[in-house]
Length: 321
Figure 1 (cartoon, rainbow, N blue to C red):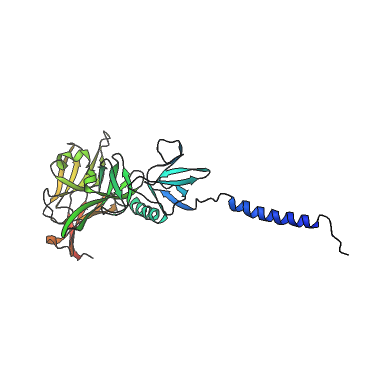
Figure 2 (figure 1 turned 135 degrees about the horizontal axis):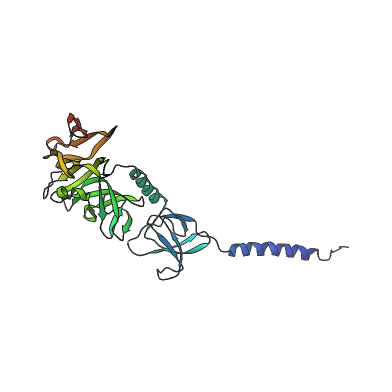
């Protein structure tokens, strides 16, 4: 005789059904698809409730913020575009402009690190809506479009030769650092150089390229201060393939409150930067470099002492490697 246990088959069936239901329910659970990361590369970025700047603002980020998103390697887009984004428990939509994937963000951070302690050659003001680029090229990645004019420290001047329609043209670019630490390249047309106002008598009648503060003086009786400068200039209306063609050193006289020209050299095929080495006790060595007679394979170095009297102490020619 076969004996059946009451409820035995029922319990087994319930267990099996529970397992099936558990698998089914788990498969229907929403999957967090915010798997990829991107970084904010503009001075600010925002998460909105909907892909529309007039919708509710949920969160705002500064440069360097890391955010999750649904899209793989989102990057700057000239045309308006949006990406679904999430930070913490807040999710919504962000404009693609001003954000970048990991590889691009690391390249931008590397550029910033290089620029952080670089010597300043000049100062200026960017034009409205100037494009800050990752490389000195018109087609290079746009780190940011500067909506308003921004103060900029000029770190380097670059002359780039570009082949356009079987004709080589030269473009001038500046490597700059902004007050917020961002760095990049702007075209010459996007930057206005602004020399120190005390040098207006000299720089208003010439075309300054770079300037360097050599030292500061202070009148112990009145507390008045004055600074000495070295300024490089380019020739107006001509391109000799050099960064500058003339260099002058101006020494401030606390007694007369005027500048005197301590050094003036023209006809140069100058090469930036001018190197200034601090020797201590307010003494400096100034290295001015140029290509002798325009020979780009060689560099003629003229070494001067500071402070006044300015003296040429050494000059030599080396190969430009």
